[in-house]
Image (tube, rainbow, N blue to C red):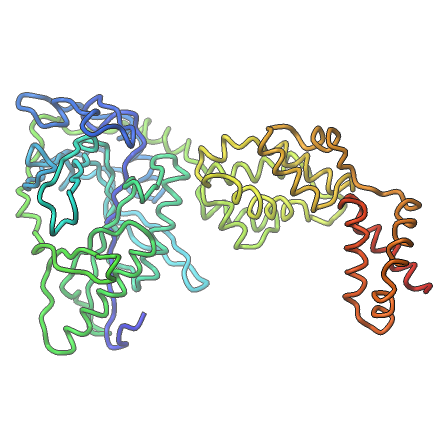
Length: 493
């Protein structure tokens, strides 16, 4: 980022996560993504007069689970409030949210940046209902009409507000990545930013370096990817720096990120809290949270991504990059550990099996699956036990690594285990020294130039001869044995 050194960038993120509940926040409507417009609605989520909301217990549980994962203080009581504003996608003209008494406060998320780590404070976490979705006929500016789909209206939403402690767009993107990973591990949100399950608004201000007072903040909306979060904040930091340099006053406002054009534009003047006319929701009593229930949720928390990454490095000896990839989701991390355990410990003190498993998952499995989400991994026909079985065949010399990749594809297509495919298709590696020696003699006789090149010091000539032997055996020859036998015969010519 090229913000002038005389300014300090201050960023805070507001992350909205749709909770993975089967029904909405205050009614029994289903929450299936992609359903026909307005097919998952009822009088409650359409804001009809006379209806009464009922709090979704599972949504509260998910909120508590997330709060505990971020080391937040879960308040013994919380209260819902009405947040008033007018927009076509909100039929009641108010949103049921939380304001003065949120579900949880004062937590943190540890992020890794520039080879180190930083704790970013989390100010509050509260529950609310989502709004509907506007579908414009054309662009937002040129649309002649807009349609409203209320399927999303009332979906359980969790908003988490960070403290203004992020110092760069890069840190903001790192925070959002780490935040998403935690939600996925907790299984409270699928983290799909393209479908809107996870959305982010960013607040950014600049202040002269060394000054403690915060500058005027600007909110940026329409940030639907990690890259867009970083790009939008980089642009806005430059825009504000240029304005301050010429003596302009920064206006508190909401700006929209235009990803295709690479800039932010003014959307509306920023509202203050009193503009929303918050007051306690009269149709819902305050929630009093049983301490035993909170402790039960705490006891069931899974190992979180950062801790699991660190354990993978120390316990299995895989590089930090591998650990980062393998902990993208809880399902993937579970798959990796199950595969390592199915194969068993490395013989002697080699310790190479965990890294081999990691290589195959990253280079073969993730490339073959339609996605790296939980469902794709759980539905994979290559179970951890089957992957371990394939790797066992490579290790004991039954098949070569090259043949193993072909077997892997056949396993994906058929669902059979590796041993059955190898036996059925006759793919067992040729390890008969006498048979291989005859093939090597024939290859050497047919390639005198390669032998001469090798004698003149061209080491690549040996590789060409190995390739010819592998070709003659249909790729079934044991490469290590071929190399040893060929080396022996070349030394005697």
